[in-house]
Length: 173
Image (tube, rainbow, N blue to C red; front, side, top):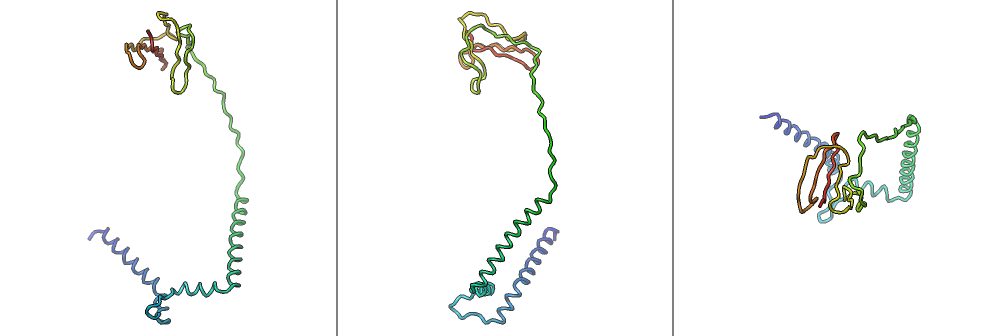
């Protein structure tokens, strides 16, 4: 027999023993008080006790007052405990100024009119100039991609400027 089976059997034995211990007061009560007549449901001993206890108006008032005082007292205890906790220290947190310093000067590729700016759905700028106007890169770099296409960006050139900076020139005629 494996240890897992032994543990399972021990668990069920303990569970059965606890159940029998819990049932002892009820079984003693049933020995003393006769069983109810057939056809009428019997009340549980605990419900009989509480029914008799709460039938009296004075008892109900006393218990409700005691519960009210208990709840109020617990609320005051939490306030007292909160007062005895250590005070927090004040800490000053400074935020340094962020200054953007670039080594590369970026030039405008065309002198044309800005047709559409950069925003969430348009991740670039559109500059209008007459067809055939030469386009200069925004900084010195190496051409890494050239593609001729009719969809998407259309005719495209990508220039790598170094240090993780690249520029794409698209929609060119």
